[in-house]
Amino acid sequence: MDWKSIKAITFDVDGVMTDGSLLAFDNHDMVRVFNAKDSFAVRVAVMRGIKVGVFTGGNTEGVRNRLITCDIPAGNIYMGCRGKLADFREFCANNGVAPSEVVYIGDDVADVQLIKAAGIGAVPADGAIDAVEAADYHCHAAGGKGCVREIIELVLRAKGLWNFGEEDYKRIF
Image (cartoon, rainbow, N blue to C red; front, side, top):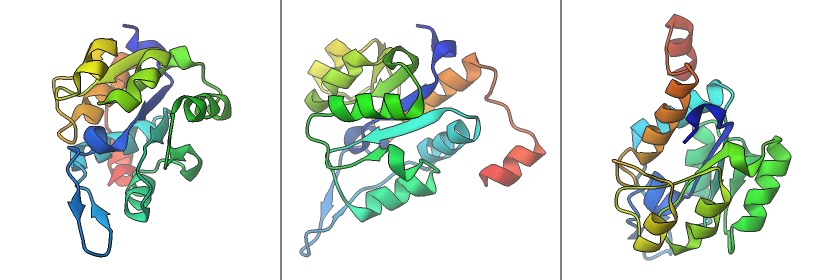
């Protein structure tokens, strides 16, 4: 796998950025828990010029707000996805990247098309068997437990961009 050629990192939310658990309230709200290390790495990737995109079937303001606080541009957040391939193609066109220059991290059947369409398809350690069989890379970390950070570090380290000076700390934190 050529991590150095990657220009964009994309992923699903439930089961990737979170562990897939949903806390349901009487008012129909669904609460998810995000990993701060994944979120930190997303901010670093954006800061280093890597395009970041999200494709999720969920559609809540809480999730959107969390992704925006990670500095993901609102136009790169695709929510309520049903059949993610068209949205993936739109993301690539809008961000000037070829699918071969994109990593996609997905954990379940709905992600298989993008795992196969991306230059590198990745799956969390606890991904569903269909996603595991489609993936090029199997993360050591599980969904919501650092798999996004793992992929971002692989890409940024390959490019020599996983380093931090005083100004970086001011911008990141």
